[in-house]
Image 1 (cartoon, one colour):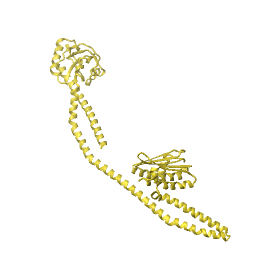
Image 2: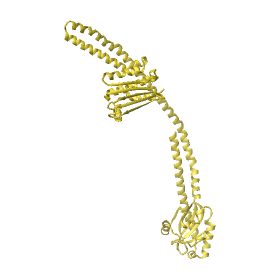
Image 3: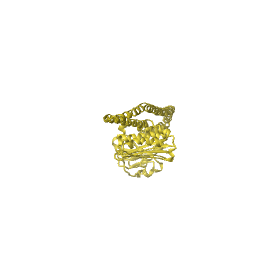
Length: 419
Protein backbone atom coordinates (compact mmCIF):
# COMPACT_ATOMS: atom_id res chain seq x y z
CA UNK A 1 0.00 0.00 0.00
CA UNK A 2 2.81 2.39 0.86
CA UNK A 3 4.46 1.57 -2.44
CA UNK A 4 1.23 2.30 -4.31
CA UNK A 5 0.79 5.61 -2.49
CA UNK A 6 4.41 6.53 -3.25
CA UNK A 7 3.93 5.64 -6.93
CA UNK A 8 0.77 7.77 -7.11
CA UNK A 9 2.60 10.65 -5.43
CA UNK A 10 5.39 10.38 -8.01
CA UNK A 11 2.84 10.36 -10.84
CA UNK A 12 0.94 13.35 -9.43
CA UNK A 13 4.04 15.44 -8.69
CA UNK A 14 5.77 14.45 -11.91
CA UNK A 15 2.59 15.06 -13.87
CA UNK A 16 2.22 18.46 -12.28
CA UNK A 17 5.67 19.63 -13.33
CA UNK A 18 5.41 17.97 -16.74
CA UNK A 19 2.05 19.62 -17.44
CA UNK A 20 3.33 22.94 -16.10
CA UNK A 21 6.32 22.73 -18.44
CA UNK A 22 4.05 21.86 -21.38
CA UNK A 23 1.66 24.69 -20.64
CA UNK A 24 4.51 27.20 -20.27
CA UNK A 25 5.93 26.07 -23.63
CA UNK A 26 2.47 26.41 -25.15
CA UNK A 27 2.07 29.87 -23.64
CA UNK A 28 5.50 30.86 -24.94
CA UNK A 29 4.46 29.82 -28.44
CA UNK A 30 1.28 31.86 -28.02
CA UNK A 31 3.40 34.85 -27.00
CA UNK A 32 5.51 34.47 -30.15
CA UNK A 33 2.37 34.41 -32.24
CA UNK A 34 1.08 37.46 -30.38
CA UNK A 35 4.24 39.50 -30.99
CA UNK A 36 3.99 38.64 -34.70
CA UNK A 37 0.36 39.78 -34.80
CA UNK A 38 1.03 42.97 -32.82
CA UNK A 39 4.10 43.63 -34.96
CA UNK A 40 2.04 43.45 -38.18
CA UNK A 41 -0.52 45.84 -36.66
CA UNK A 42 2.17 48.34 -35.65
CA UNK A 43 3.93 47.97 -39.01
CA UNK A 44 0.75 48.81 -40.92
CA UNK A 45 -0.83 51.43 -38.67
CA UNK A 46 1.89 52.98 -36.57
CA UNK A 47 5.29 53.08 -38.29
CA UNK A 48 6.52 55.98 -40.40
CA UNK A 49 9.91 56.89 -41.85
CA UNK A 50 10.23 59.82 -39.45
CA UNK A 51 10.52 57.41 -36.53
CA UNK A 52 14.10 56.64 -37.56
CA UNK A 53 14.93 60.37 -37.23
CA UNK A 54 12.96 60.70 -33.97
CA UNK A 55 10.41 63.23 -35.26
CA UNK A 56 7.74 63.97 -32.63
CA UNK A 57 4.87 63.35 -35.06
CA UNK A 58 6.11 59.85 -35.93
CA UNK A 59 6.61 58.99 -32.27
CA UNK A 60 3.13 60.35 -31.38
CA UNK A 61 1.51 58.35 -34.20
CA UNK A 62 3.08 55.09 -33.02
CA UNK A 63 2.27 55.89 -29.41
CA UNK A 64 -1.42 56.34 -30.28
CA UNK A 65 -1.53 52.86 -31.84
CA UNK A 66 0.41 51.23 -29.00
CA UNK A 67 -1.64 52.84 -26.24
CA UNK A 68 -4.95 52.09 -27.92
CA UNK A 69 -4.43 48.62 -29.36
CA UNK A 70 -1.31 46.95 -27.88
CA UNK A 71 -0.88 47.90 -24.24
CA UNK A 72 -3.32 46.72 -21.61
CA UNK A 73 -4.14 43.33 -20.20
CA UNK A 74 -0.97 41.29 -19.93
CA UNK A 75 1.31 43.49 -22.13
CA UNK A 76 3.00 46.15 -20.00
CA UNK A 77 5.79 47.52 -22.18
CA UNK A 78 6.57 48.07 -25.89
CA UNK A 79 9.94 48.95 -27.42
CA UNK A 80 11.20 49.46 -30.95
CA UNK A 81 14.94 49.04 -31.60
CA UNK A 82 17.34 49.72 -34.44
CA UNK A 83 19.96 47.21 -35.47
CA UNK A 84 22.61 49.26 -33.66
CA UNK A 85 20.70 48.85 -30.33
CA UNK A 86 19.14 52.31 -30.17
CA UNK A 87 15.59 52.55 -28.81
CA UNK A 88 13.47 54.42 -31.36
CA UNK A 89 10.26 54.19 -29.36
CA UNK A 90 8.93 53.03 -25.99
CA UNK A 91 5.74 53.72 -24.12
CA UNK A 92 8.18 54.77 -21.36
CA UNK A 93 9.49 58.06 -22.87
CA UNK A 94 12.66 58.06 -20.77
CA UNK A 95 13.95 55.11 -22.78
CA UNK A 96 13.67 56.79 -26.22
CA UNK A 97 17.06 57.52 -27.73
CA UNK A 98 19.07 55.40 -25.32
CA UNK A 99 21.47 52.70 -26.50
CA UNK A 100 21.91 49.30 -24.92
CA UNK A 101 23.35 45.98 -26.01
CA UNK A 102 21.20 43.55 -28.01
CA UNK A 103 21.68 39.83 -27.58
CA UNK A 104 22.73 37.46 -30.33
CA UNK A 105 19.22 36.04 -30.65
CA UNK A 106 17.73 39.49 -31.19
CA UNK A 107 20.40 40.43 -33.76
CA UNK A 108 19.83 37.14 -35.60
CA UNK A 109 16.15 38.07 -36.09
CA UNK A 110 17.21 40.95 -38.39
CA UNK A 111 18.57 38.36 -40.84
CA UNK A 112 16.46 35.28 -40.19
CA UNK A 113 13.11 36.82 -39.30
CA UNK A 114 10.51 35.07 -37.20
CA UNK A 115 9.96 35.65 -33.49
CA UNK A 116 11.72 34.84 -30.22
CA UNK A 117 10.42 34.76 -26.63
CA UNK A 118 12.26 34.34 -23.32
CA UNK A 119 12.11 35.29 -19.66
CA UNK A 120 13.29 38.86 -19.11
CA UNK A 121 16.47 39.44 -17.18
CA UNK A 122 15.33 42.38 -15.07
CA UNK A 123 18.90 43.05 -13.96
CA UNK A 124 19.79 44.26 -17.48
CA UNK A 125 20.11 48.07 -17.72
CA UNK A 126 17.46 48.38 -20.46
CA UNK A 127 14.91 46.76 -18.12
CA UNK A 128 15.32 49.22 -15.27
CA UNK A 129 11.78 50.60 -15.68
CA UNK A 130 10.22 47.10 -15.94
CA UNK A 131 11.49 45.85 -12.60
CA UNK A 132 8.44 46.99 -10.61
CA UNK A 133 6.24 44.83 -12.87
CA UNK A 134 7.67 41.58 -11.48
CA UNK A 135 8.56 38.54 -13.59
CA UNK A 136 8.08 39.21 -17.32
CA UNK A 137 8.26 37.33 -20.60
CA UNK A 138 9.69 39.33 -23.50
CA UNK A 139 9.10 38.59 -27.17
CA UNK A 140 10.73 40.08 -30.30
CA UNK A 141 10.10 40.21 -34.03
CA UNK A 142 11.36 42.33 -36.91
CA UNK A 143 9.08 44.82 -38.63
CA UNK A 144 9.90 47.35 -41.39
CA UNK A 145 9.44 51.05 -41.80
CA UNK A 146 7.70 52.24 -44.98
CA UNK A 147 11.13 52.75 -46.61
CA UNK A 148 12.05 49.12 -45.86
CA UNK A 149 14.36 49.70 -42.91
CA UNK A 150 14.12 46.75 -40.46
CA UNK A 151 13.55 47.52 -36.81
CA UNK A 152 13.05 45.22 -33.84
CA UNK A 153 9.60 45.26 -32.26
CA UNK A 154 9.54 44.06 -28.63
CA UNK A 155 6.72 43.49 -26.15
CA UNK A 156 6.86 42.61 -22.44
CA UNK A 157 4.12 40.33 -21.07
CA UNK A 158 3.43 39.52 -17.43
CA UNK A 159 4.62 36.00 -16.71
CA UNK A 160 1.74 35.58 -14.29
CA UNK A 161 -0.61 35.52 -17.26
CA UNK A 162 1.49 32.77 -18.85
CA UNK A 163 1.55 30.67 -15.67
CA UNK A 164 -2.17 31.32 -15.20
CA UNK A 165 -2.81 29.83 -18.59
CA UNK A 166 -0.76 26.82 -17.60
CA UNK A 167 -2.58 26.50 -14.32
CA UNK A 168 -5.92 26.58 -16.13
CA UNK A 169 -4.80 23.75 -18.36
CA UNK A 170 -3.42 21.88 -15.37
CA UNK A 171 -6.65 22.47 -13.48
CA UNK A 172 -8.58 20.96 -16.36
CA UNK A 173 -6.37 17.88 -16.61
CA UNK A 174 -5.58 17.28 -12.93
CA UNK A 175 -9.04 16.19 -11.66
CA UNK A 176 -9.49 13.26 -14.09
CA UNK A 177 -5.84 12.25 -13.62
CA UNK A 178 -5.99 12.31 -9.82
CA UNK A 179 -9.45 10.75 -9.89
CA UNK A 180 -8.22 7.87 -12.02
CA UNK A 181 -5.25 7.29 -9.72
CA UNK A 182 -7.55 7.40 -6.68
CA UNK A 183 -9.83 4.79 -8.26
CA UNK A 184 -6.77 2.64 -8.98
CA UNK A 185 -5.69 2.95 -5.36
CA UNK A 186 -9.17 2.04 -4.14
CA UNK A 187 -9.08 -1.08 -6.29
CA UNK A 188 -5.61 -1.95 -5.04
CA UNK A 189 -6.49 -1.54 -1.36
CA UNK A 190 -8.65 -4.69 -1.00
CA UNK A 191 -6.22 -6.62 -3.19
CA UNK A 192 -3.29 -5.60 -0.99
CA UNK A 193 -5.29 -6.43 2.14
CA UNK A 194 -6.17 -9.86 0.74
CA UNK A 195 -2.55 -10.51 -0.19
CA UNK A 196 -1.40 -9.51 3.30
CA UNK A 197 -3.93 -11.90 4.86
CA UNK A 198 -2.77 -14.72 2.60
CA UNK A 199 0.83 -14.01 3.54
CA UNK A 200 -0.07 -14.10 7.23
CA UNK A 201 -1.94 -17.39 6.76
CA UNK A 202 1.00 -18.79 4.82
CA UNK A 203 3.39 -17.75 7.58
CA UNK A 204 1.16 -19.31 10.23
CA UNK A 205 0.88 -22.50 8.15
CA UNK A 206 4.65 -22.62 7.78
CA UNK A 207 5.03 -22.32 11.56
CA UNK A 208 2.51 -25.10 12.08
CA UNK A 209 4.31 -27.32 9.58
CA UNK A 210 7.64 -26.59 11.23
CA UNK A 211 6.22 -27.41 14.66
CA UNK A 212 4.65 -30.60 13.30
CA UNK A 213 7.95 -31.57 11.67
CA UNK A 214 9.82 -31.03 14.95
CA UNK A 215 7.23 -33.01 16.90
CA UNK A 216 7.31 -35.79 14.32
CA UNK A 217 11.10 -35.82 14.51
CA UNK A 218 10.96 -36.04 18.31
CA UNK A 219 8.43 -38.88 18.17
CA UNK A 220 10.54 -40.75 15.64
CA UNK A 221 13.64 -40.23 17.76
CA UNK A 222 11.80 -41.60 20.81
CA UNK A 223 10.62 -44.63 18.81
CA UNK A 224 14.10 -45.36 17.44
CA UNK A 225 15.67 -44.90 20.87
CA UNK A 226 13.09 -47.23 22.45
CA UNK A 227 13.56 -49.85 19.75
CA UNK A 228 17.34 -49.76 20.10
CA UNK A 229 17.20 -49.85 23.89
CA UNK A 230 14.71 -52.70 24.10
CA UNK A 231 16.15 -54.61 21.15
CA UNK A 232 19.76 -54.38 20.01
CA UNK A 233 21.17 -52.97 23.25
CA UNK A 234 19.54 -55.65 25.40
CA UNK A 235 20.53 -58.40 22.98
CA UNK A 236 24.17 -57.31 22.86
CA UNK A 237 24.30 -56.96 26.64
CA UNK A 238 22.79 -60.43 27.00
CA UNK A 239 25.31 -61.94 24.59
CA UNK A 240 28.18 -60.30 26.46
CA UNK A 241 26.77 -61.57 29.76
CA UNK A 242 26.50 -65.09 28.33
CA UNK A 243 30.02 -65.15 26.85
CA UNK A 244 31.76 -64.08 30.04
CA UNK A 245 31.28 -67.47 31.84
CA UNK A 246 32.46 -69.32 28.71
CA UNK A 247 35.69 -67.37 28.75
CA UNK A 248 36.20 -68.21 32.42
CA UNK A 249 35.59 -71.95 31.74
CA UNK A 250 38.09 -71.93 28.87
CA UNK A 251 40.65 -70.25 31.10
CA UNK A 252 40.16 -72.92 33.82
CA UNK A 253 40.49 -75.66 31.18
CA UNK A 254 43.83 -74.23 30.13
CA UNK A 255 42.59 -73.12 26.68
CA UNK A 256 44.08 -69.63 26.86
CA UNK A 257 43.62 -68.88 23.15
CA UNK A 258 39.88 -69.55 23.30
CA UNK A 259 39.60 -67.60 26.57
CA UNK A 260 41.42 -64.61 25.03
CA UNK A 261 39.16 -64.68 21.97
CA UNK A 262 36.06 -64.82 24.17
CA UNK A 263 37.36 -61.98 26.39
CA UNK A 264 38.01 -59.87 23.31
CA UNK A 265 34.49 -60.55 22.04
CA UNK A 266 33.00 -59.65 25.43
CA UNK A 267 34.97 -56.37 25.50
CA UNK A 268 33.86 -55.51 21.97
CA UNK A 269 30.23 -56.24 22.83
CA UNK A 270 30.38 -54.14 25.99
CA UNK A 271 31.99 -51.25 24.07
CA UNK A 272 29.26 -51.59 21.46
CA UNK A 273 26.63 -51.37 24.20
CA UNK A 274 28.28 -48.23 25.59
CA UNK A 275 28.41 -46.68 22.11
CA UNK A 276 24.78 -47.50 21.49
CA UNK A 277 23.76 -46.00 24.83
CA UNK A 278 25.68 -42.83 23.95
CA UNK A 279 23.87 -42.79 20.62
CA UNK A 280 20.55 -43.21 22.44
CA UNK A 281 21.32 -40.13 24.51
CA UNK A 282 22.05 -38.17 21.35
CA UNK A 283 18.94 -39.41 19.58
CA UNK A 284 16.58 -38.74 22.47
CA UNK A 285 17.83 -37.55 25.86
CA UNK A 286 15.57 -39.02 28.57
CA UNK A 287 17.38 -37.04 31.27
CA UNK A 288 15.81 -33.67 30.29
CA UNK A 289 12.44 -34.68 31.67
CA UNK A 290 13.72 -36.93 34.41
CA UNK A 291 16.82 -35.22 35.83
CA UNK A 292 16.89 -31.86 34.05
CA UNK A 293 18.95 -29.94 31.49
CA UNK A 294 22.19 -30.11 33.50
CA UNK A 295 22.36 -33.92 33.40
CA UNK A 296 21.37 -34.02 29.72
CA UNK A 297 24.16 -31.60 28.79
CA UNK A 298 26.62 -33.60 30.90
CA UNK A 299 25.66 -36.75 28.99
CA UNK A 300 26.05 -34.81 25.76
CA UNK A 301 29.63 -33.87 26.63
CA UNK A 302 30.64 -37.35 27.84
CA UNK A 303 31.63 -38.64 24.35
CA UNK A 304 33.97 -35.65 24.00
CA UNK A 305 35.63 -36.42 27.31
CA UNK A 306 35.97 -40.07 26.25
CA UNK A 307 37.74 -38.87 23.10
CA UNK A 308 40.26 -36.87 25.16
CA UNK A 309 38.70 -33.43 24.60
CA UNK A 310 38.58 -31.17 27.66
CA UNK A 311 35.05 -30.03 28.49
CA UNK A 312 33.49 -27.53 30.85
CA UNK A 313 29.80 -27.26 31.74
CA UNK A 314 28.35 -24.33 33.68
CA UNK A 315 24.58 -24.21 34.27
CA UNK A 316 23.21 -21.28 36.30
CA UNK A 317 21.27 -22.16 39.45
CA UNK A 318 18.18 -20.34 38.17
CA UNK A 319 18.19 -22.53 35.08
CA UNK A 320 18.60 -25.76 37.06
CA UNK A 321 14.98 -25.42 38.18
CA UNK A 322 13.95 -25.82 34.54
CA UNK A 323 12.54 -23.52 31.86
CA UNK A 324 10.04 -23.95 29.07
CA UNK A 325 12.95 -23.82 26.62
CA UNK A 326 14.98 -26.76 28.03
CA UNK A 327 14.27 -28.96 25.00
CA UNK A 328 15.27 -26.22 22.56
CA UNK A 329 18.39 -25.36 24.57
CA UNK A 330 19.43 -29.00 24.47
CA UNK A 331 18.77 -29.30 20.72
CA UNK A 332 20.89 -26.21 20.06
CA UNK A 333 23.72 -27.43 22.30
CA UNK A 334 23.58 -30.88 20.69
CA UNK A 335 23.84 -29.41 17.20
CA UNK A 336 26.79 -27.20 18.22
CA UNK A 337 28.61 -30.09 19.99
CA UNK A 338 28.00 -32.43 17.03
CA UNK A 339 29.42 -29.89 14.57
CA UNK A 340 32.38 -29.30 16.86
CA UNK A 341 33.15 -33.00 17.21
CA UNK A 342 32.79 -33.75 13.50
CA UNK A 343 34.41 -30.69 11.92
CA UNK A 344 36.36 -28.52 14.37
CA UNK A 345 38.90 -30.95 15.97
CA UNK A 346 38.99 -28.92 19.21
CA UNK A 347 41.08 -29.34 22.35
CA UNK A 348 38.47 -27.75 24.59
CA UNK A 349 34.69 -27.22 24.53
CA UNK A 350 32.81 -25.00 27.00
CA UNK A 351 29.01 -24.98 27.44
CA UNK A 352 27.38 -22.29 29.58
CA UNK A 353 23.69 -21.78 30.33
CA UNK A 354 22.56 -18.80 32.38
CA UNK A 355 19.74 -16.40 33.03
CA UNK A 356 19.61 -12.97 31.39
CA UNK A 357 17.57 -9.89 32.12
CA UNK A 358 15.00 -10.99 29.54
CA UNK A 359 15.23 -14.79 29.62
CA UNK A 360 17.86 -17.51 29.27
CA UNK A 361 21.09 -17.75 27.23
CA UNK A 362 23.20 -20.64 25.96
CA UNK A 363 26.82 -20.29 24.82
CA UNK A 364 28.88 -23.10 23.26
CA UNK A 365 32.54 -22.27 22.64
CA UNK A 366 35.35 -24.36 21.16
CA UNK A 367 38.97 -23.69 20.22
CA UNK A 368 38.81 -25.70 17.00
CA UNK A 369 39.70 -24.81 13.46
CA UNK A 370 36.69 -22.53 12.88
CA UNK A 371 35.01 -21.88 9.53
CA UNK A 372 34.07 -19.15 7.06
CA UNK A 373 30.59 -18.07 5.99
CA UNK A 374 31.28 -19.55 2.55
CA UNK A 375 32.09 -22.93 4.09
CA UNK A 376 28.90 -22.86 6.16
CA UNK A 377 26.86 -21.92 3.09
CA UNK A 378 28.42 -24.80 1.15
CA UNK A 379 27.55 -27.16 4.02
CA UNK A 380 23.91 -26.02 3.93
CA UNK A 381 23.88 -26.49 0.16
CA UNK A 382 25.08 -30.08 0.68
CA UNK A 383 22.03 -30.76 2.85
CA UNK A 384 23.44 -30.17 6.35
CA UNK A 385 20.47 -28.24 7.71
CA UNK A 386 20.69 -28.99 11.44
CA UNK A 387 21.83 -25.51 12.42
CA UNK A 388 19.33 -23.91 10.04
CA UNK A 389 16.50 -25.86 11.67
CA UNK A 390 17.67 -24.74 15.11
CA UNK A 391 17.74 -21.12 13.90
CA UNK A 392 14.16 -21.45 12.65
CA UNK A 393 13.03 -22.93 15.98
CA UNK A 394 14.77 -20.15 17.89
CA UNK A 395 13.16 -17.48 15.70
CA UNK A 396 9.78 -19.11 16.17
CA UNK A 397 10.30 -19.00 19.95
CA UNK A 398 11.10 -15.26 19.74
CA UNK A 399 14.83 -15.65 20.39
CA UNK A 400 18.09 -14.91 18.60
CA UNK A 401 21.00 -17.12 17.56
CA UNK A 402 24.41 -15.82 16.49
CA UNK A 403 27.44 -17.74 15.26
CA UNK A 404 30.93 -16.25 15.50
CA UNK A 405 33.48 -18.42 13.73
CA UNK A 406 36.81 -17.58 12.15
CA UNK A 407 39.39 -19.95 10.72
CA UNK A 408 42.02 -20.69 13.36
CA UNK A 409 40.09 -18.94 16.15
CA UNK A 410 37.39 -21.46 17.00
CA UNK A 411 33.63 -21.03 17.05
CA UNK A 412 31.15 -19.50 19.48
CA UNK A 413 27.41 -20.07 19.24
CA UNK A 414 25.29 -17.74 21.40
CA UNK A 415 21.58 -18.29 21.85
CA UNK A 416 19.12 -16.11 23.76
CA UNK A 417 15.46 -16.96 24.42
CA UNK A 418 12.78 -14.89 26.15
CA UNK A 419 11.56 -15.81 29.62
